[in-house]
Image (cartoon, rainbow, N blue to C red; front, side):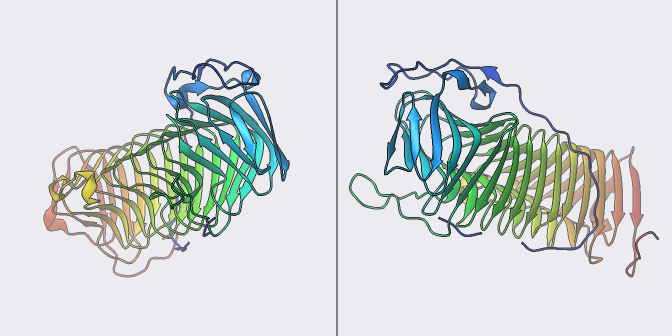
Length: 408
């Protein structure tokens, strides 16, 4: 089931990481019975705000090459495939050497998967395949270590007519609907085929410590990615965090990226208002029609543009006139041939921006640039004719004609 970096030497800035997680609320327990639950569980709060109750959960125990289920809502087929057909809470523990968990639930209500020292590998598809549900929470139990992995090729998924479905799974953790990750445990994902995590709807990361190695993208979601807490460390051949149609929003937590593509990209906007983002290697660091930084700390090393505000997909609804890079708080460090490239404007109203060119290239390429507040440090070449200062600005502009040794 899959495929599994480009490195760039540069300036290293050690940034603090604000680790946080959204508060998780209590949710109802499913009834324990040998039959399917009579009524679907009701969604009492947002997926990432729920605290699934392991005491009332259906237990899925992994035993190497077989699976056993104790409780309602899930069945085992072929010895190593578990299918969850009813909303509720399911606790998964043990090791599965070649099998998968499938969520195929047409009823109203959400599914919560508690991973409790669970290790799942599948050679022919996703380790966790969420085919149909109102929403799924993958909850990493506190203090546990969990892992998911796949192979390098996937078998096609067929419909009732026996023909391959139009949208095929392409990630170790794949969801056709809303997906949330939370909890206080750790999870390692190794993706050999394509992406590590992919939601065709929305993806929210609210907690946990995730480490990803991917032959394709790290994490992506068509309808937006939101990071509210936890830590996410990505080492990817292609993009790090991506949303093809909508926004990527980072409000807390710590994100670290080594990738060969874009570290963080969005069809509409990349918004960072808290936490820390450290891009150690990338083609482009942050890429979207609109890039806004209002808090937190961001450090980007890139082979092309550190920040690139340009047109996204035609489905995003964004036009060229909307493109901009706006900094109103937080701290930004960049090292790239071009630090900021915008098809529209560049604006600094507060916070601090330290822009350094790795090849004595252009620091900022934009139709217009306005600096009206905050702190600006420029090291390299700059198209000064497009730059406007408007009072209250602390700015240093240092132009060098040759390489300067460290420490000088």
